[in-house]
Image 1 (cartoon, rainbow over the protein chains, first blue to last red):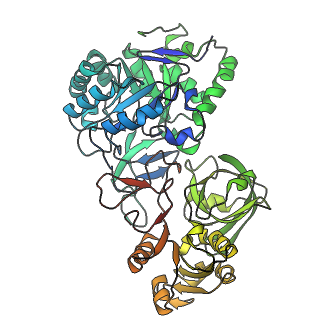
Image 2: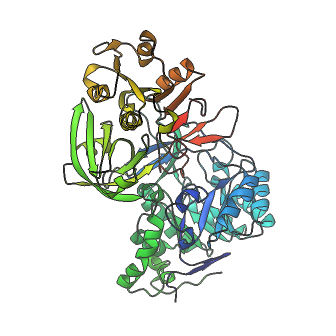
Image 3: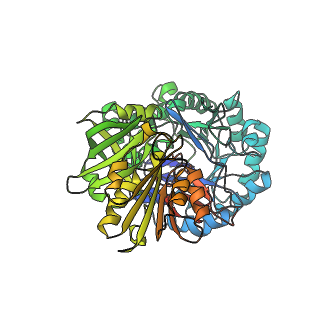
Length: 312
Length: 253
């Protein structure tokens, strides 16, 4: 028995560990460090219809236990991702989750339509929560009706299951999650970064050229845990959890909160080997916890130990 | 590659400037001047610090890094004592083209402030190849100057300070003009205005520039350190993995 294997809509994962979108490019850089086939899946960098350069630099600033970024969805555009990046990734035995971004409903729909036809794309992740683009993005992630409408439109054209990435920059994340579930989403990924800012003490000006950026890293882990804990009890579609994971213990904490798989983001920047190391460490941790299969951990913090089976 | 390296020595050599000697098997992978290592100092701060290689000593299995104490990370690094370890990722990036300057040719090395260190290994390798090395070092003021004597051992060495407290008062470009320094290949590392001035002054010559930028991952994945290239709205180069050394004109400064 593979104690780490997880079944989710569109995704048969050999383990529930995947690099998070925006923290792994299209995999090329990390392929120099290890065989990408060891990963459960890869969430590739957000793709828009046209190529985008993104924001001016500085684009990152460090914070206590975290970092702010304002990259601005830099990417080569959907056609080049399909022509160059996805075929390159196809050499690895790993399902791809394509992160889809846009400034208008039409752009999201067009990108989703095209990229969902690529053979190694097994699911989409709708990026309705990027805080770093001037137009769109975050608006789709903060108004439940708008998010639902976008979800329905993308579901209609996508050849693969659609996961929606939730923004933590909302008053009530459960409302948002329910609206998206009712609109037909196959799953949720959460959380994206929290909107933040740093100011240079010497210059009196914001450090990031974009002024504000998205906070990630261990600093946001408790917020992610709390939100997954709330949302997983309110919806029945699966959640892929993310936000500050660094270790196998962190992974289990996300499962206990209600996640069925997890993504690793900022930690990849600090240790390129973090994903394979976590995958290596998990079986021994399951032994220590007296758990046969990692899926048994999902929702343990609120469901009193009974195994949850879900849609897939 | 990533490994724990051991501190051999770590001492101040000028105001807030430290020279750190590390020992470890990673040194056997270090060959190219201008490459850098990405150093994790401790549990905090979270991110690594990109620091360029100053001296590579394969025989002793040691490398030297020079850094300026700026914030929390470099302050902690300055407190590391002999025998302690630091987590090092690298060597990373594309360094200086040592072979661009041929035996008997003249190389002009221009360093500004904390941009001076990577030029030392470069000077060493160029000298070994029979290239004539002239160095121009620019500093804010006398008490932050370092390695001037070391560079003097390779050939002519000039210093400029902004306040005139050491060497010529002014900038490195003033020194080059005043002494009418000529060269076959120019190599430079320092603040962007200095690099821009050099690129403008010598548009028709071989000029290699090493850039500095805030980095995240250091391996090209996070897109924090991109710069624009001429004549394109969307094309880019990453300082960490395409650079940090570029030909003048290759990227917009």
